[in-house]
Each structure stands twice: as C-alpha cells, then as structure tokens.
Length: 299
Image (cartoon, rainbow, N blue to C red; front, side, top):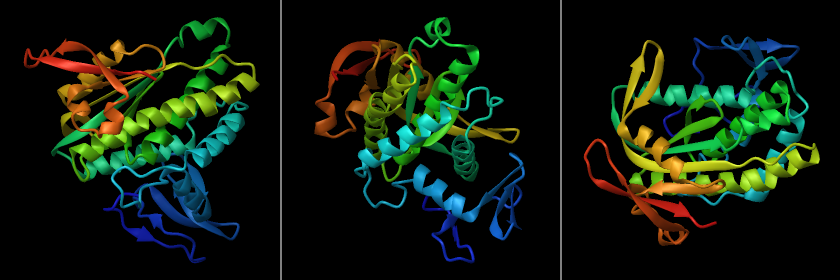
C-alpha cells in the first residue's frame, strides 16, 4: 500500500488494511463477519478477504527498495491458479474481477490526492497481438474472458512493481509509475515490470491456456517517461502529456513478444537492464522536432 495511506485494523487483529473512502465503503457485519460494503459494486467484502486481496495485489508496497526483487515463482503460481479458475467463468456478464476494480479504485485515489500537479512518471503500455485473428477460433464469450484475464494479470503485475493502472483500452492496459523516490526508480520499476509481464505470459497465462486448448497469447510492451499533468474532468481523474501518446506510438516498433523503451528510459535504468536492449531507430518527436532514440529488447 502507498505510504500516504493510513491503516485500520479489524477487531480480530488481522493485518492492517488501507484506509477506505467512507463515501464508497460502508463498514458492516454480516453473518458474524466484519467487512465493507462497496456501494459502487454493490458487494460485501470481509476484512479477511481484503487482507488476502492486499497480499495478492500489493506484494512489494512496503519494501524499502526502489526496485524490490519479487518472488516470481510464488507470483506465477498464484497467477496460474487465478487464470485456471477464471477460464471457467465464460459469459460472466462482462464484470471485471474485483482485483481490477480495487486497483482502479487505488489509482483513482492516488490521482485525486495529487490533482492539478505536474509529475514525471514512467508510462507502460501492454497490448495483445493478434486478438482480432483469435475470433476465428474462439467464441465472442471466450475471447472476452481471455482479454479480461489478460488485463487482470497485467494489472496485478503493475501493482506488484509499485505502479498504478491508469485505464484499459480494448485489449491494452496502460499503467503509470510515479516519480518515487526519483525518475530512475520509476524507470527501473516500469522496465522490470515489462520483463515480469513477459514471464507471466509465458509461464502462467500460456501454460494454462494451452491446457484448456486455447491459443497462446503474444504481446507488445512499451515504456517511456516524461512529465504528465494530473487533471480531473468531472469526477474522473486522468493524465495528460506527450509521453502517453509517445509510448503508444513507439509500441508499434516492437515485434511480437518484445519490449521497446524510449531514450529517456534507457538513460535512467541500470547497466544490467540497458544490456538487454539495442537501439533500433530514431523517432521524430512531433512536439520538438528532435530525434528520439528507441530501444528494443533482444529477448
């Protein structure tokens, strides 16, 4: 959980939970179980379930390291269990998992607390390659379910690297990594997250999808960094800045299952990560007319 979030405890002295918006979450006791009623989703979640949710969604939030080492074996094991379970929920009325709902809530809370500020952030785009072609072998319900599962797993990985999910755009997920404690940390977290996503696709989603007779997923991932304006339109917060559109454009330079990063990211990551990328071209920045280097992963 983020540092600015207060903590509350339930009466059974379970692990701390993040402070929740009282206008959205109403504390209740149902069947002897204390918890919260989400007024938006119209769903009761026990405090013990919230604790489990936090352990799953925010595995590294309390770490003092700017880019903590995640126990990917455990993360991938949990992911395979979720994917297997969720593959059975074809035709679930289009509802996102509560994991996605709660991650969107955390992101919205962060942006609202920082409204009208200009912040340097690393932006990560990840999208599916060939999802349209999958319609030839999958029913609409099956395809929707796979896209939903993909978005959930990518969102959980973003959170695991201290990022937030900005939005879902069709079969793409857009995440952002705040400048905390500095730009180098944001770029390291976002780039490491991109490689973690590749492992999650290969060793979780595709493993389980093949077991159920589904085709493998392929992705493209892009990471760039720059200044963004946090703005609120009505009640909905968003980010505005050239870096978001630039990340989307350089993603087109990635081949299937590759990662591309902008030059500003490359110069802010450590030598071990830089060694995994090769410069492929110079991209012409529309806003300044400058040539901007783009790097592509070799694995």
